[in-house]
Image (cartoon, rainbow, N blue to C red):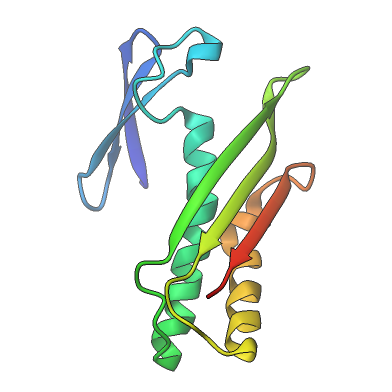
Length: 133
């Protein structure tokens, strides 16, 4: 089992990661009857994409002794209607270290080919921008 969830009422869920017992709360967004007091499930999808990109880039960076520590990512999720769904995820990655052109291209490819990127429906526009020093 990967995780378990307990519905707490008021459109809030307590999610527990099975391997670590780490918990997080999801809350419906304010534009969908929620309080917006925590990540919504669709926020987690968008955040998972960025975290996956950083993780795969981190693996490659570790293998090659490249420093991508302190890379920051800003994520914007765009929702559509009919049906209500994620239509676009905007990701801006800001790197703090100067890297050569070849390394930058390798890391960009790693990000764009992470497992979450491949798992999302092709109708979701993954708008990814890399900001290098």
